[in-house]
Length: 410
Image (cartoon, rainbow, N blue to C red; front, side, top):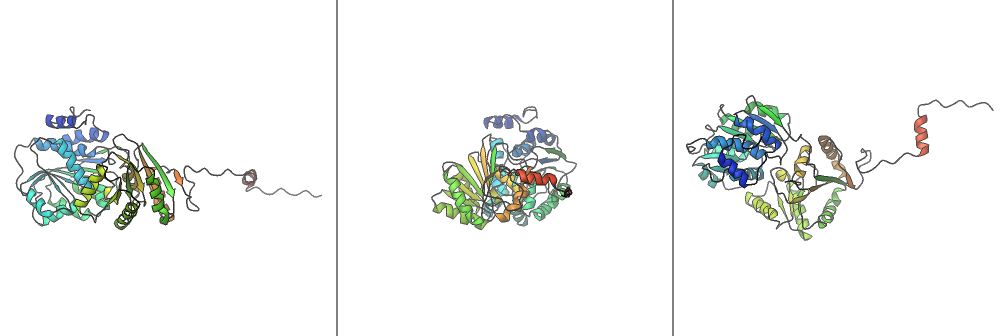
């Protein structure tokens, strides 16, 4: 099914064509027709599969059919996202689809001045993209109303749960009209998702593409077994081999990201760090410099694991393995985008071997070993063959369990 066959308005089709978006992705083919028919949709798909258009296009089409402007402080369509980066990415994509139309798009995220956001919401908003925490702040200040919200999207709902937004989502749900259309998209289905779907969705259609745990086929994965104290030296050596290419390095903590970034800068690498303690301005400037290739290395926590769409990223390094195994798949999904190839290298310290096994279980495959030796007692890793038993050992195995032959009397 093409975008034309889905019945989208001509202005949306024209903007898609100008952006070079001609063929719907699998999630778009499955989700858009149901959404256009007014059904609630639960979509399961990894990042990078075209989810923004899957929910953005049908809602934009519906909003374009409304002839009157939104009332002051009201929101007609609300899209909730877990991070500022993902919210900004959604806003940019929707701006492309809606270029030249009368719809007013708003963005409210933490780390940015709240006064300007309050002033812009005063005029009324057709489509608002928000992070839950900042939206709650604005609701408490009576700067925005949700009683006229007809369309709702929860994007990367599993990450919102991981980040502890469940209480904020419960508060927001109570302020929304019962008569609305809701689209929920998630990469995984944690147990709390059942509660979330019950609170938000009514008789949803479930669509699923790119099974959870399946990374892009063009990502070349490998793991190095290395002591924690030796990780920085190993990373520096690997980065030195491709200084002209973009690399994204993931750490587990904000402090670790800052410390690693300073170490790389001291060695002459053009690097920056982004994490939750950085202001929105700092994060935006760092991302733009990385996108423009003024910086070659971006050190980040999991705030950049989803919603970061920079096709030039050639390498992803898991300097620290994530505590949540699904986040590994999201992290390495920042490379091999737009049909390109990519490399994903993981560093595994002895104390992280449990995390590595959990990641491999989620993916259903072993990660090839590029260097180092796994801890004693660990399963033989892919890429390192088990030593063949000697003839004497084979003989012992064959005879194991047999009763020894009685010795004949001399």
